[in-house]
Image 1 (cartoon, rainbow, N blue to C red):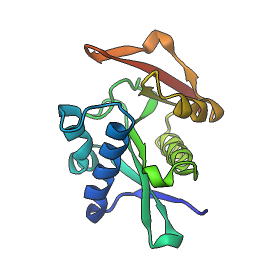
Image 2 (image 1 turned 180 degrees about the horizontal axis):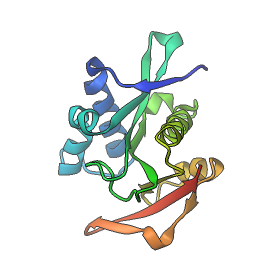
Image 3 (image 1 turned 90 degrees about the vertical axis):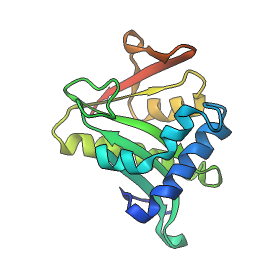
Image 4 (image 1 turned 30 degrees about the vertical axis):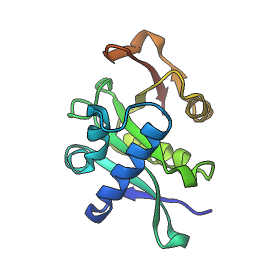
Length: 165
């Protein structure tokens, strides 16, 4: 299947938010209706303060398959990026699109954007239980950076992965 990754169009923001919330809530990473679920849904703010990337299937009328937020260091959506790193946040793939390469396409596109901004590294946070995602990240050259692991709120421990691109 061909997958195109591009910046989200405003008319896609709501659907991208729903995909993100459905993925995070459906996989048990955050409760429905909670503060973080509301933040995941707010794609308009993400698109204004970072770059909201979407993976689409051009052969299916441009169906949205997933999305990710790409942030530059020092910007509002960069939680852990060092000055020489791009960062991704909130990577989500629609349940029906899983296993088709959308997640990999989104990560690769963010890697390309990181390089295009002249940054030699990319990093991001992930939950310890996201084993399938960890395998993808490691296949793409990312490695755990346990010295950078952090706890943004009590009870939520995050691992950091980073790569030289």
